[in-house]
Image 1 (cartoon, rainbow, N blue to C red):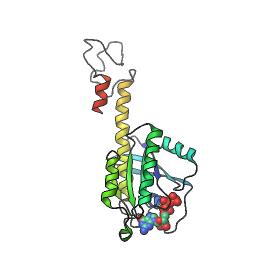
Image 2 (image 1 turned 45 degrees about the horizontal axis):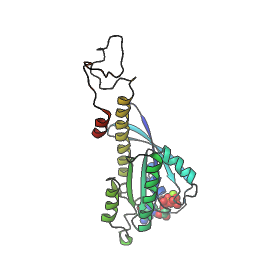
Image 3 (image 1 turned 60 degrees about the vertical axis):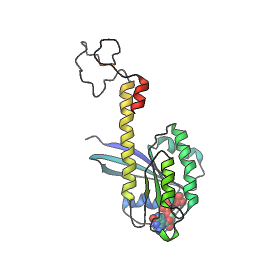
Image 4 (image 1 turned 30 degrees about the vertical axis):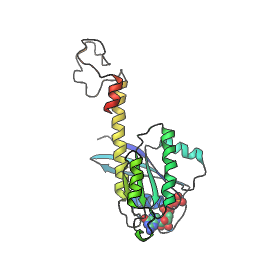
Length: 223
Ligand SMILES: Nc1nc2c(ncn2[C@@H]2O[C@H](COP(=O)(O)OP(=O)(O)OP(=O)(O)O)[C@@H](O)[C@H]2O)c(=O)[nH]1
Ligand SMILES: [Mg+2]
């Protein structure tokens, strides 16, 4: 079974719990103290739907000063956990700009993103209603919304697994498009590999080739 490696970036304002979530997921530890992050990276292997994948997780600084660095990890990241604290409406608002920046830098509206409302154990200090956060996730193309508690280790595995699942799905769709667009590579579902004498495996276009491909525009509609 092939092993895939995916790059995940954890983003959000300072103090919302990015490092605590990451530490719980990777090391199963709870960190009570607050030590602002500069930048940390972790690796963890997990099983997702029967596949073994390795996650390379970048825990970023909430108080970001180096925009150039941010652009770099937004380019290399394949999936993003956008974290706010349910005790701070400002921390939710600040995510909108980050999301726009991700989409702009990657030039792709379909970037895998999970919206995470952390500190769900602090219900009495809640400043962001579930409905409000869910509405935001819907306005972001229906990305998943989870409430987590790093303190109680609630929904921690779920957010990373969901994001990973989205990345895998996108990877598969992108691979399909590449297969279609690269005439030198046979399509993985090609049914008649021996039909062309001389072992040609490229795309056939002419009348009577026996296999007609949909026009490019139609392919996009399917995806
Ligand atoms: N009650 C509660 N406190 C939390 C939770 N997650 C984090 N905290 C606390 O919030 C503080 C900040 O947590 P961090 O994980 O360091 O926050 P961060 O988002 O990494 O902050 P920066 O590195 O500055 O961007 C710490 O004191 C944590 O103990 C949670 O789920 N519940
Ligand atoms: Mg941190």
